[in-house]
Image 1: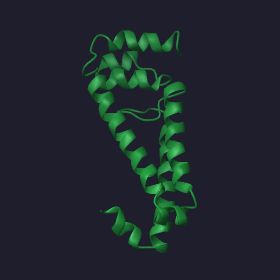
Image 2: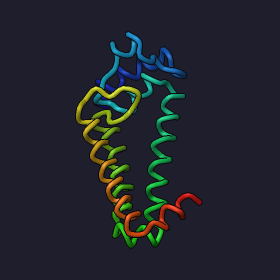
Image 3: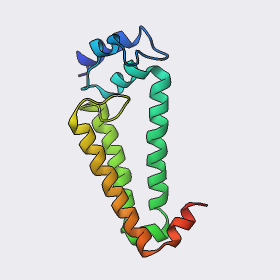
Image 4: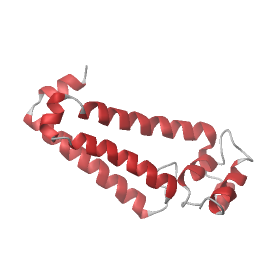
Length: 141
């Protein structure tokens, strides 16, 4: 991945580094789902990559911040921290083994991964809200 796949994708990325190739033939001819970050740079350029990283970091920080609240911690028993660690693990998988998110994900594993992670987060947070509706009011502030 570091000596063959990554350099091949990055060579194509250098042709359009700011906005990438989008959904063009150039993207599909050079993309490689085994190098997630490089593939995202090829697809959306530096600007698109920054958008995705902002979204990813915003979600991760929000999950971690909410999980640190006493009222959420008592309902989830530390489960929110597990989701924050899950986001970190997702980034590690995305960076080293295969693309999990981006403008285009071709593998069913990526969709199943996010479906499971988001469903588990929703179920846990909804269970916490069911026990204490004031959590919802406090998160709005």
